[in-house]
Length: 313
Ligand code: NAD
Ligand code: UDP
View 1: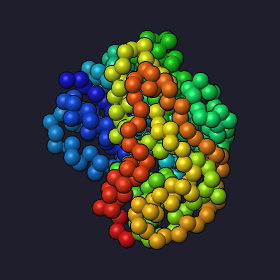
View 2: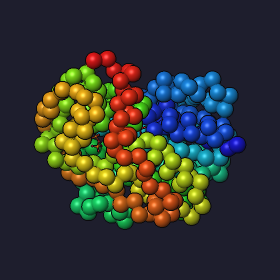
View 3: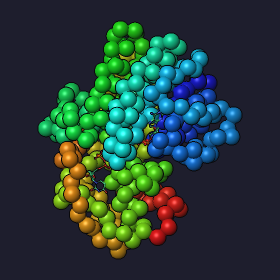
View 4: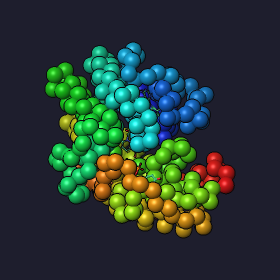
């Protein structure tokens, strides 16, 4: 049994990860400020003897003894939420990284960083391999998130070089699934909630921009494969589903799968919204034998079933 700290463990991805780690018989410490996460996401675990919830902000130092592994997921991921208090978002990424790295240095724990495809910005190379250095605006409304995550990657590699800390860095591409908050603001949950409520689906811009959508279970499997791979496999490594869809295609799928008669309305495209996004997952396939197994329609059906239970028309 390992003692595993999951920061952001009460969030969408973090709660799925906690479920899997508990299933495997580990002791799990779920640390979260509950900024975008919710204790509801981990309500099935709260009474489990191997599970502990710690309300804490990663901006403040973390003092825990004898940790074996740390998954650092704490950070708002939806543009709406990370732009709400952009200074705190930057602090969460940078000081959060410093605090988990210091904990890893003191305890000898392996430490995993949930980085993002946003480090590629609005990419001029398509699809994006890990070698691409990105095209990021340093001063725009997305920069608090993109640059915070880039700085966190830098800190991870410097702690590895300077202190010999064992690191693992994954670059996550858009991931969706049950337990996204109904007010998360990202496109998949927005479209599903709008369709179920009979409201217009809000397509930003002309809807020709593309994204690649990975189902949460596939991604969490990839996280654990990376953490359990040999110490030389440090990343950064892309994880996502290479299927690429326009936002119009996504809206049409959601309408068909929900049976909704909602209409599409166009809203202004947010500043610096990337035009296209698709992972090159060659490395994950080669090094971890990992690739997604759940197609978009199947994952959407499961996600719609989840939202049907919590959204009233
Ligand atoms: P989420 O918003 O559901 O989860 C983030 C969790 O972190 C929440 O529980 C929130 O309360 C917590 N948190 C935020 N700031 C904190 C702080 N300062 N201290 C402690 N806890 C804090 O989002 P998610 O989709 O589950 O994302 C999890 C991680 O994966 C994030 O680091 C995100 O950047 C990364 N990521 C996600 C995606 C995706 O598509 N889901 C894509 C790229 C990267
Ligand atoms: N988007 C949209 N309608 C919404 C929410 C988002 O058309 O209600 C678009 C958004 O402009 C972007 C894409 O969907 O082009 C993905 O947005 P999301 O916020 O999910 O993630 P990110 O932009 O970080 O990839």
